[in-house]
Length: 81
Figure 1: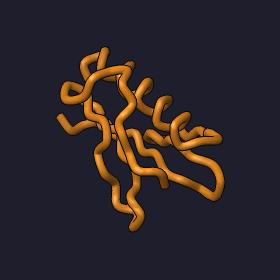
Figure 2: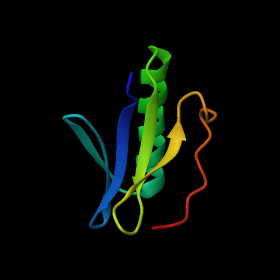
Figure 3: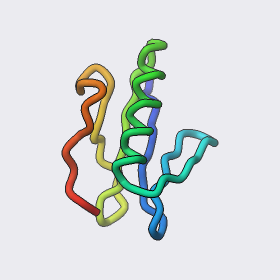
Figure 4: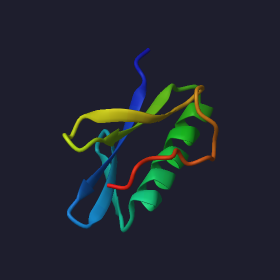
């Protein structure tokens, strides 16, 4: 089964999390990451494998939190963007 993906990306001064057709904006990167990890953790509690992806400077997604690999509720250490 493929992992579900929750993406975090910047749009101007806001940060967006997206999963399938769901999207929500946050004022800071940390707020968006926290919400994405909470969403991913909730989905993993239902038996899904979930990845939280953060776009790097070139727009390529990097897995920064993966259910079953990373602790919850710890935020990952990421460079400021």
